[in-house]
Length: 147
Image 1: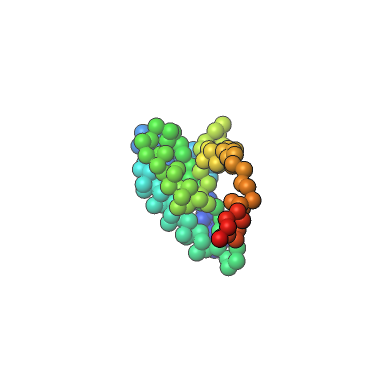
Image 2: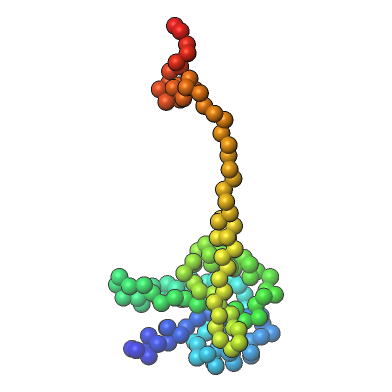
């Protein structure tokens, strides 16, 4: 049973173009990963969802499941890669996206959407409010009107 747990811990999804399958297989073997190699971003997304659900089911009660890993190998030129990354952020935010650099896995942190949100909010200068307007806003009555 521990061997099965170790296999699940090392499982990941690799996204690579059709031309890079042999290189991807060598890299996966060298890193000791059990990988599902995909060539289509949509199929990679489906595999990630299934793998993440499997990990959630295998996790002990009240414990976090092991992270699900997507490894990109020469996938920069793939047409639908930006759409995949956007969908992962929306539907599977716990998936770790990594690539191979210097023979090791290196995480890709795309925090550009966070940086966009961290910009200073616009400064709005409000006109001064006199006592009549303030009274009208707070109480619904006007101070300066005679009835």
